Image (cartoon, rainbow, N blue to C red):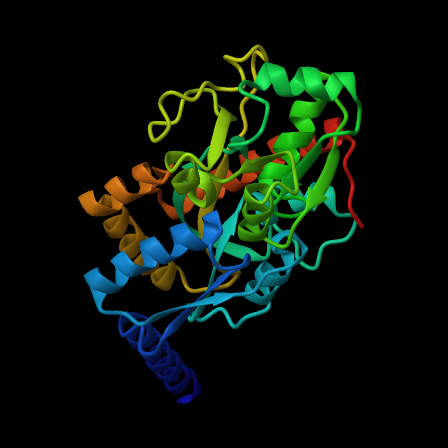
Length: 322
């Protein structure tokens, strides 16, 4: 006769304990997996934003660079982590939108394995050449590529990255054939471009903007529909004769699917506060990014739309990785 009251009491106790645990969150360090090497665009943005969250909240946030397979290895570790809010991932266009269409087999389901926490930042990619390069404009580079097919080499931060796919889409639109040289991260690709080992590179701005401003690299175009505030004198690809060209990268903080909504909301609020800081906005704009502070729902909508868009791009480009 007393079974149901006792069960109800026990259930209420469990719910109270769970609510307290979420209210007390975080009670230990939070690990944020960045699925690319240190020094690349995703790593730079992640560390910048996490530093602001530390200042605002006093939380302990640890960056864990876990690179490989176009970001799949790091995001797979997030997908398989306990959904308790203590392992997060800084996802981005490649591992959340491009790779599902690019790879015949994925270690995770990008549309189901994660709980979107917040949109963080977006940026175009920049087509850069060495300062000793003979190409002063995008048209000159295209003319050289048409004159000698497969003679020019295009660097990327890795197979399936936004820079790689942007380069492939551009090659198709421009009617050129070049040789793709994938690297294990943005830093190594930039180093070889600086050393003259490759001809050009569609790079995230964080990796190359300091070299552009120092005169060691020359920016020929940016991939977005509008010019980049940090590089106002650099024309867009569309302005350079390729109407409608528009690609961009973005960063979204994600948690494993099943993470309690109360924890996700607390994380989202911390990200939003960090991105609203004037110093954060100034830093992001200076290095070529745009703050994209958004809710969990807005992040989920972005992922859904971008997965559809990049799936179409990958299929049209006829690029496939196994």
